Length: 506
Ligand SMILES: [Zn+2]
Image 1 (cartoon, rainbow, N blue to C red):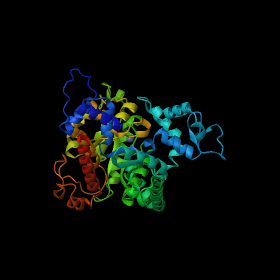
Image 2: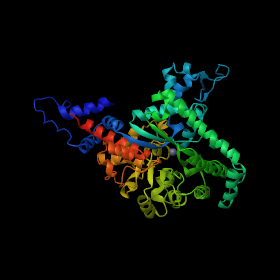
Image 3: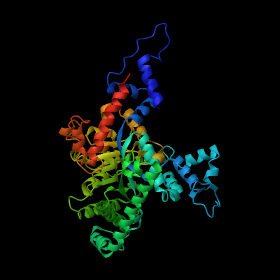
């Protein structure tokens, strides 16, 4: 990939790709600026732009589900290393007494390139294939994804590093959270108090024990990951990509379970600083509007129980609806983003596809821009699952109304779409300038749930902290040190400066 960019630059500099004499046209001048270079790359063969964007430092991927982030090749390698079996329908199972009844040892299976190719296809999303295939892939890898979290995390971090990503905010459901329940049915907001008492007071001991289980789980996963990646001193904090988590609540569970998991997620956020936010996940397509509204009421009710100073970060999958529904002129107007923002007080929105169908679109866009509510757009995921292609995506709507946007992969491994590719799709589809592309990268740290003050005094990134007019200065390093967010933002700025200089170097 690097070669593609070098070849492109050589073409610009040396005219190596121009027709031979007798009368060669004068060589095009070297790009005068990074904007100039980016414009040329956008109009060049895709490889050169992808290569440039792979090397470009990208702050974060804020919308990434750990189980979906792993590529088929990584799952297969992991399964082979653990002596797992694979069935004719590509389900992974642990061996029984060293044997694979009804299946084949994965290591044996991988000896056939043809079978390997078929397995990779079966464990990845073909383009625009819909939700049924998506669910089937997750079921095939369940035995692996629930058991080998450290290996998965290590694979995801390695890929992020190769993409020049500094930070991942991974969504996962820790085991303690998966087992929390409420004995009290939750059918209306009137049931919230009783259920909350049930979970946090009557069953306090159980809650405490499940919270401890979740923290231990993260401890063990991180320790093992640092060992696999051989991070300096085997310390997870010293690994090259910073990792934080969002507690993920699957919205299709019974309402009493969704309520219990939401209460648990808030408690876990207060307990474990690595869990920086929560997310209610899954497209809204399969649930009636009243259930969705009840979920938003749950979030409002539980977050109100915590003081303003507590960790409240909420990002929600909202407006993740298929194109058929979004484009149906007969369908009534929608409110999923409005409800997520106004009722549940989400400060980030995942997908946000329904914006043009929301009842009061203009007011909602104004509110989102004024309150800096960021939209995480996952172009490949939206095209594949919801059939909302980049041409139909609301990117332009959010851009026109100054709502902050960040690009995300959603399920990178399943979609086989690294973050650089998402950037390339956006750059071409929406004719982004380099400055706009850089803003997407900066947004991913500005709107991250990392604690601490921002490096920036203005949301247009024109005014850093006074000590950071020279980002490389020791004064700037000292000024950002107390803030994990600003520390990472400064790192991004330093890397961007170096990257831009290198890209223009003859
Ligand atoms: Zn998602």
